Amino acid sequence: MTQYKDSSRAILAFLNCCLHESVFIIFEYEGTRSSSKFFKVDVEKNRKEVINYFRYFDRQVLQLKQILKDAPMPIFMMPASVYSQYLYAFGIKEFKLKGLLDNDPLKQGRRLYGTSLKAFSPTEISTRAAGTVLLNAGAHSAEITQELAISNPNLLIINAEDTLK
Image (cartoon, rainbow, N blue to C red; front, side, top):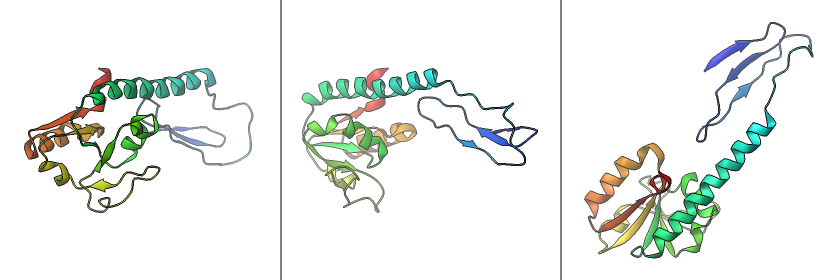
């Protein structure tokens, strides 16, 4: 994290914003107020970025709905986290989801906040003749895809991140 020091009053730590990251701004008051220096925010640019962020999920979910229409049942989402909550909130909930899969034993058997979906161990799908896993796991997607394919070669694994490439 880069640190900038304003000679009159503040230490500003700023992490630049991009689609999948956050902006963190920390101010520390060190003296008298000065109106001569002010952190400027490009409101119009930020507004467009937020709109594009939501449009990305709208487009992604529209494509996923088309793919899931013909997907073998049961359908699970993985992991039981905010990644699945986004897809659920943007419309994946319309499909007959069996639940969520997650490697974390603390999540298994519990409901994902904001949904009626329960989390199961990935072994839940390993013994089924067929099924679908909608995967939205960020940096862990490749590893999880490999593990799922080994545990059940009959699975259809849909990586949500690949739908808009």
